[in-house]
Amino acid sequence: MSESLLKVRISVYSDLRQIIGKPSLVLDLRDDSTLQELIYQLNVEYGEGYRMETGKSLTDALEKDFNIIINGRRVNLPSDMRLKMKENSEVVILRPVKGGQVSRCHTGNPC
Image 1 (cartoon, rainbow, N blue to C red):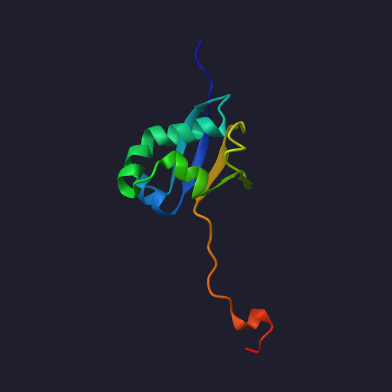
Image 2: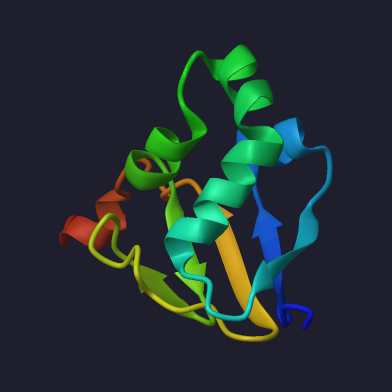
């Protein structure tokens, strides 16, 4: 009996995009896969390149340095590692947006 697979589309940004070499990819995962298994699969395929480029573990970086959004919902790691993946799930992996300089106009001061 063959195992059923589901397709998960992943969009990546910043240095992860450069390491993977493309803006998105599709992973085939077992139909009972969790976010933890998705991260494991990314680490198997791209972890060594990430470590060579950044000196960091891809798994650790995904938990600490990136935001992961699944079907429009930001997940919290490591607490959401057991979240089940679904067929055609859309996963976005990006670095958090960091603020810039606050304009005086937004602080109540005259512009």
